Image (cartoon, helix red, strand yellow):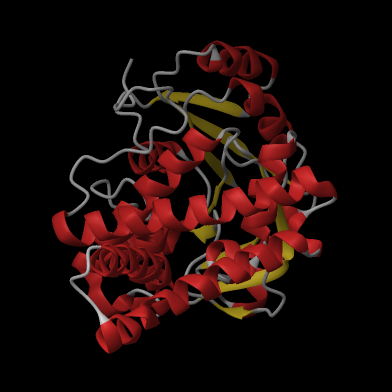
Length: 345
């Protein structure tokens, strides 16, 4: 079994992620291939230290830093029939790989994924984790809290048959975000199953600050817009909710300006006010979620939740609109890269 992990500026998370991979109890030999991007925080040095301590760890260079390129390099260096994608910000349950292998065989799937169980170490990160784990936060995708096993549109990370990857092709290196969705689309179009198994759980550590969260979601939304340009109706309707929210808010601002300047008066002004209703309903929803059990414990948790949810939705929706209108081009997720707009040092 070949575990593949692209790595860039992950010193605070890498050791634990590697430990949970090496602790997997699976029949047969395993290897962990780390595709090292040009990190500036000591990640590569830590990776070399870990590799010296365990000969199952294989290091390859990924100077381009892009995730799909790193994944393809790692897969190409792998020796075994099953490929397990893992993330430096994730931690696997001890039985994850063994259970995934059993599910692959049981349902005869090409790719199996489970639940992304987000967690946090700080009040802000825990608020982001609550948003990830809520259907309100990320739109109700199966791997964000689904409980029903079955065929799926995509798979979080994924435990994949190497033979199927060789047939349909590896990750599309022209797609910097959403590359997993596009690969699973090709797998499904080739007649294979992508399967969701809620018994599989992966702990995921989200971004640690508001600016990094906004940059991440803006880039992700922009690439989803690019995927809509490329694949149209192959995209789920749930991806269109955040951009619809952004457009509604923009329309509301235009109507408000026309009302305040007297351009819209009388019954026309009253009729145009209907545009505020969806925005008001959204605000009530966010307040309700933050004030309820999903908002955490204490007023600080609830305020963070109320701030995080619209930040995710609006950043993603705005990015989506830019992607649909102009494409993603060379947009990269800079949320792990400080203020630089490139993954290179």
